[in-house]
Length: 318
Image 1 (cartoon, helix red, strand yellow):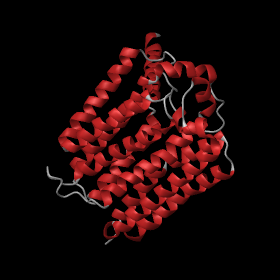
Image 2 (cartoon, helix red, strand yellow; image 1 turned 45 degrees about the horizontal axis):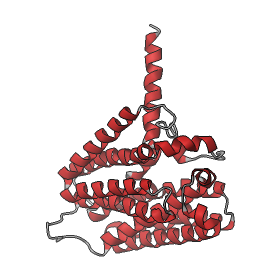
Image 3 (tube, helix red, strand yellow; image 1 turned 180 degrees about the vertical axis):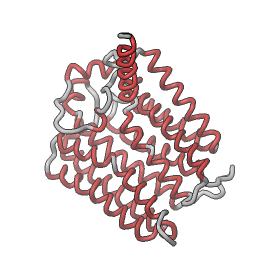
Image 4 (cartoon, one colour; image 1 turned 180 degrees about the horizontal axis):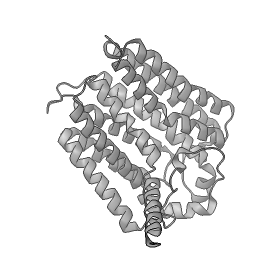
């Protein structure tokens, strides 16, 4: 009888480790990105395809976030010798932080997790549209290159912006009809959507997350913008990218006025002010790692808030 509680504890620890390995909370929040793309492209999508896209997005993001920890596990082992002290909540710390580096997961088990989820995401993406599969593969390759450049250049943030932008665009092609020659592509809104997601990733997650980790990164020799160029330059870059994100989001809602009306525009303005501009200005005034972490946490919620706004706009009575 004692074996059952022990087995349950082991299963619970395993689930927590896998959840932390994939940064489950952040990965789940990220699913909003391709869903926004899908709903902007086709405001009234068929529910069966939307359901497949949802499963593919969850599998894909859980795999992509895990790839980061898989490739960086040697570096992360060294990171635990110089951990920063946490003050306040960190979305990325839910679950177990870097479980592979801590020995909470075996390397073969971690590889199997990534391959299984990545394979599922790829198959479903290909079923939705061949471009979705291509974008997923390119995003994964950009993630690999980004990890390889950890100690090489601080300018790798452009790669993670492109990675997130392309992965989000997969949601657009999952539902929007596109011919082999590119017919049917909205060449105004689609590039704007890519820039929106890329700018949000750079200013709302990547740069501020690096800022919060600057103490550890200095010890590890990781080259990031805060480490190389300092807080003043980083604060200006963060605010610039957050402003770009804000403007692009509002512009997309205006461009889709017939679908989203005033609810889309006003809701996106309010979401952008709360999740982007207010914390970004606070960081500009108070350039500390703790403030950067607050920007990261709030900005991580921004796509989910916009998704809620879009759903409310779609549900309005005609």
